[in-house]
Amino acid sequence: MAAISNSPSSLARGLGRFDAKALAPPEVLPLAELLPRRAQLGPILAFTLQQVFTEKECLALIQASENQGYVPAKVNMGSHEELIPEYRKSLRCIIDDHEFARKVFERVAPFVPATYANRPVVGINERFRFLKYLPGDCFMPHYDGEYRRPDGSGEVSKVTIQIYLNGDCIGGETSFLEEKMGGSTQPVKAVRVNPTTGQVLIFEHPLLHEGSPVIDGVKYAIRSDIMYGPPAPHPKLHQK
Image (cartoon, rainbow, N blue to C red):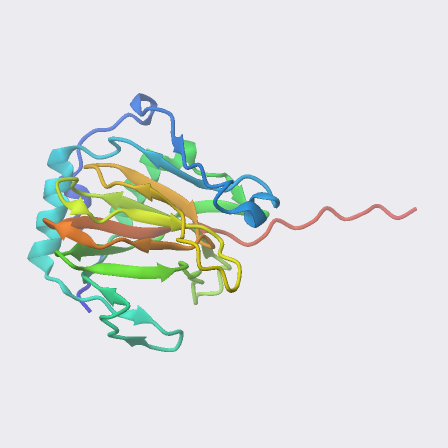
């Protein structure tokens, strides 16, 4: 597993000045019809932001990851990780960078839910998983799992953030898949996000999705998590 520390910040150095107010409004993904049971519980958190990073910044991030080096991506099995290329086939580079996490959060914070399941947002996980998909690579349907910090802080990830570093490949969409009933033989419907340079995708963890196969070219992306703190205490009832 390729990883570096957060000192000095190698990723943040490649970022320029940024004004979040200049971003276009988020584009909400139309998932309610695709996920009717989930939609009954309330609005589904899944949207994209365009041009959060410039092409120059994305190229610098790609170069930083290539300098660090990539290895085959493994599948998290809970207690350990395994290489399962028939399920997940791509390359991965893991870089820990607290300063980069702070700067990324500054860019997307105005659009991120301030609370999730009564938990206050605290920032972005400093562990950035750079993903490199070659032709034929894909990640079969899956859910993103929660990450709980082992330090006793009570912080847990609830939302995925994905940064697309290029858009010149064919295929490689992030595809959200419908809820299938048992025994159905109908084709699975999907809402697809096509990678574009500097685009950010944000969505709640419990949404079934896949990294669709890359047909031609190379796809670069970064995945991390939006972290939330311990649940806010319920106000105590005054007893008479």
